[in-house]
Length: 112
Length: 115
Image (cartoon, rainbow over all chains, first blue to last red; front, side, top):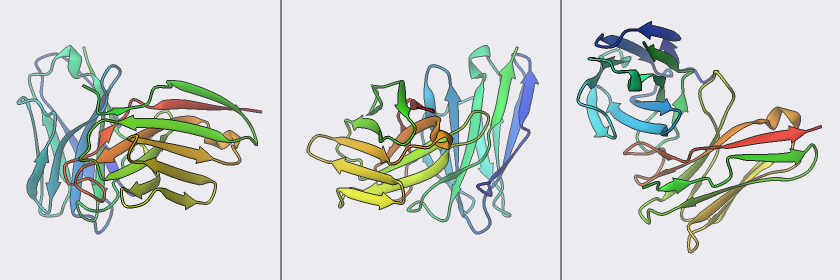
């Protein structure tokens, strides 16, 4: 158990809908990262937050957004969902940007 | 363009022998490398890392070797155990430490330990 929690574990929704994925980092970690793992693309970095502020952006679509709250939990919002958004979404956390990232168990999203 | 490549999608090794997983990278800015292990339906688990100022790092049965001139790293597992069967991801960072700009992952190698 990495100490990073993600909810929900599974999510099934329809095209065009909007969903919110939630992540609670390990106690003491200020940095939260979001990754997408799809069958063809592998694990891809989406976005990083550090102590409530956006720190770095990767291959995140404009339809996706994230935020980190004062209690340091983070949410990833996915809107106007398409079939191709079906994937595993992982959250990771670290003490700072210079430390090892620890991953949560992931949320499996299926868009029908 | 894939910046981190794991060219072997799968590898089968006999229990007790050495497992060697390879990884190549193209981005000269990468200065920190990590290996993660992943079981089905779980998140990646951190195994071992190496900074570009070193060429070897050891932790129990796991050793990572870095050849900067060849832009190549490898993970050695000795001796291999049945519980080592999993998908192994190589990851790299250009921001030192855990990744100031997120980690760039390879596509993984599925290691199968045969009894």
